[in-house]
Image 1 (cartoon, helix red, strand yellow):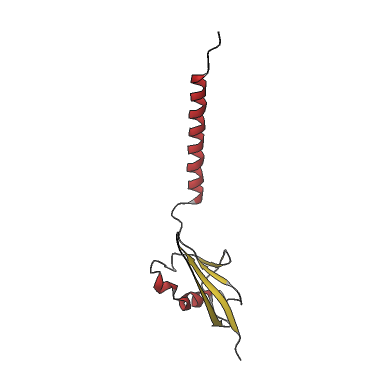
Image 2: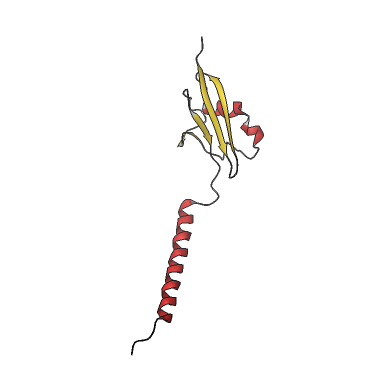
Amino acid sequence: MAEILHVEVVYALRDDVSCVSLTLASGSTLGQAIEASGLLQKFTGIDLDRNRVGIFGKLYPLDHVLSDGDRVEIYRPLLVDPKESRRRRAAKKAKHEKSSRTAKQSHSPSQS
């Protein structure tokens, strides 16, 4: 008698999360779970050559064998590099702080 696995496959968009619970045969892979979930047909923008996938926040290849209770996750590609985003925020904050200091200095009373 073949063992069975209970897994979930999750794909999250900005405003929507789809979660599909599946029962699969023991030895099933991450890729097989994604195929069985129907999410590739529902969300045609998912490209497994481009989208990363994982289990509970850790990246795994599509041929990774699943364990009972795994949550398979399909990750959206990043629109902005996180390092670049932090650089932009830091530069914006530094510019704001500099302009605030300049404004305070120009409005302070002169000492004679």
